[in-house]
Image (cartoon, rainbow, N blue to C red; front, side, top):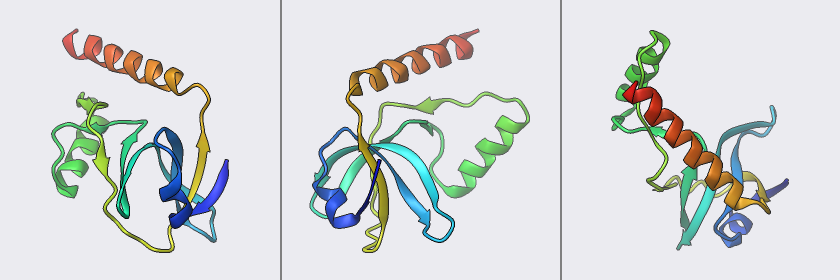
Length: 121
């Protein structure tokens, strides 16, 4: 795992596993993602833990989290990449190349199948 700046991160290949630094003093990291293709000064990403499919705002994200705490199921989207879109010039990243990127895809596919089984049962 290497700590890189935004300019270096944009040069990294698709398939790089990374997390954004959230607080330099505390050493915090954000969600673990797989970097997609770089597009200008932005890039596509796919989170290893999917986003809720019905979430379209911060308010609906909070509602989904509260519902899950009550024991309700929510569907996760593991298929749709998204753009980062934050453009923070001084952003730092903890990034690494995973030799077994196919293993990550297999794990994600297994998670999708397991979630479908739970949702249909």
